Structures are given as structure tokens and as C-alpha cells.
Amino acid sequence: MTYKIRNVQSAIKLYFIILLLPLIATGQSVSDTSYHFAIKRPMYQVGTGSAITFDESHNNPHTLKGAYYAFNKLLTGDGYVLKRTREQVTASILKNTNIYITVNAMADPSNWDLPTHSVFKDHEINEIYEWVKKGGSLFLITDHMPCPASVNKLAEKFGFNILNGFALRKGGAPEIFSRLGNNLHSNLITNTRGAVIDSIRIWGGTGFIVPKEASVISKLDENYTVYLPSKASEINYPSGAIPSVSGLGLVNGAFLKYGKGKVVVFGDSAPFTAQLQGIGSDKRGMNHVDASQNAQFLLNIIHWLDNKL
Image (tube, rainbow, N blue to C red):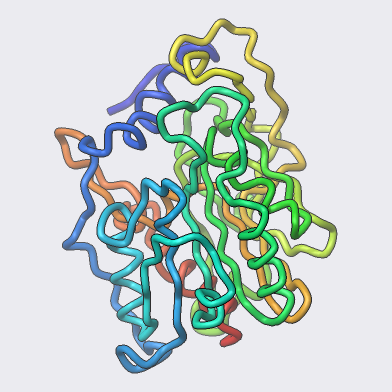
């Protein structure tokens, strides 16, 4: 279906309808359990790989049995051992994991209005910070408002500043990040031998500022505007006075070596799913025709965090 977006307000409203509602009304989308990505050379034999702890303790709407079913299936097929946690972060939990992954952690799913507090408590942030410095790997995936404000205190420990808004591309074109488009960078993750990534597809999310030591994976540009509403209702019924900033200079994917450990931050959760949405079961995520390299991109990220690149 093709939409004609007449102005910014209608674009924002359309964005809310197609992007934000599925997060609240998860019944509108289901995991595409038939999706399969053929891994040519699995990193490990099944069940023998590094331990991955997947956060389901911070009001995360995306779970391994839900929207991240394909994520779980892909990494398990690569030999990794994934374990869900529904407990606060402690040293004992991190001691038994190589990679800690948190997706769309939210302070209060029932209230998106500002102010939004950190969903990670100070002691959890300190545990993660010390663990990364000693050699742990953190994969922090967030999305549009209110997710960024819920995790920004954790991100800031490593020098990242995530905007608590939502990134909207002008004109509503598909959000493809590519080398050809000059918005996908060449680096260790995208240039993996035998698994080079030329393009990825995303679906909204947000942007952030990276520390100078970080390597950029993908970036926004002047074609993006990041809107910064204070109330969720301003997204649904925009007044035209919503604060905003240009996407120029902002990033939506980056990685960083920190101490003896590693950190990857990504500003959209949809690229690592495989979903069927709406009455027409429209594909969204790794199963989309425009996202044929998203699965390998995810594998490259995990391999880098696992010190395999």
C-alpha cells in the first residue's frame, strides 16, 4: 500500500499508526515462525557456544518466545546458548554470561509521558559497567520514545547519549542503510570476510550521539528529523509544535571497545525480528525482502561481541 504524506503532522500520525501501536497492542503482529536463515558455517556446534543472557526483567515487550523468536532461533542455530533472565542484574548473573542483551527496556509501559526514569537501577548499572570493563560484552538495543530515556543512564556510562524521541525519514521512503547511500559504514562488523554487509533495513527508532572512540555502523542524515515529544498523545495528535532536531550528525548503530570488554548500541529493535503484521501479514524484520542481509548483520554483531572477528 502506498501512502501520500501531505505534511509533517500527517507523517507523524501515520508513523504512530504503523510503528508505535504494535508495541502496545502486540496482538497486531505475530512472529514469523517459518522464517529461516541458512547459516553456511555455524560458529559452534549446537549447544556448545558462548552463553548469552537475554534480559526480560525490565518491562521488555520483546521476548525470546515473542517478537524475538527469530532472533533466538538464529543465534541458537549458530551454536549459542541463550538464557532468559527475569531478575535484576547481579554479579552472579553476569559471571555466568559472555554477552548480555537487553531490548526495549522500559521504565513504565503504561505511561510514556515525560519524565521517564531509568529502568536500570544504579547498582545494576554499576554491575554491568564493571563487568564490561573486565571483559564482558553488552548489546543494548533500544527504540523510539520512551525506551531511550529508560536506558540512557546505562548508555551514558559508556559515553553514549540516546535521544528520547523518534526518528522520521522525510517522505516516508523505506529506511534502507547502505554503502551506496553512504549511511552504512565500512568497519569490522560490516566487513567480515565472507559475510560483508552492503545494506540493512530498519523501521524507525531513534538516534544518538556516540563517544569519539566508538565506530559508527549506521547513521542518520539531513533526510531525518528526530521528534522529541513530552507526551505520547503529541505523537497521536500532533500540534505542530513538537520539539525536534535534524538527524544530521546522529547515529543509530555503533560499537565500542571499553576496557577489556565491548559494547554495541542500536537504535531500533525491528531489524532483528521477523514479524507478520496486520490483516495482510506484511513482513517486517529479517524476513522482509529489503532486509535480506539483516540476519547476517546480527550474526556479525554477535561474533564481534564474542571476540570471533
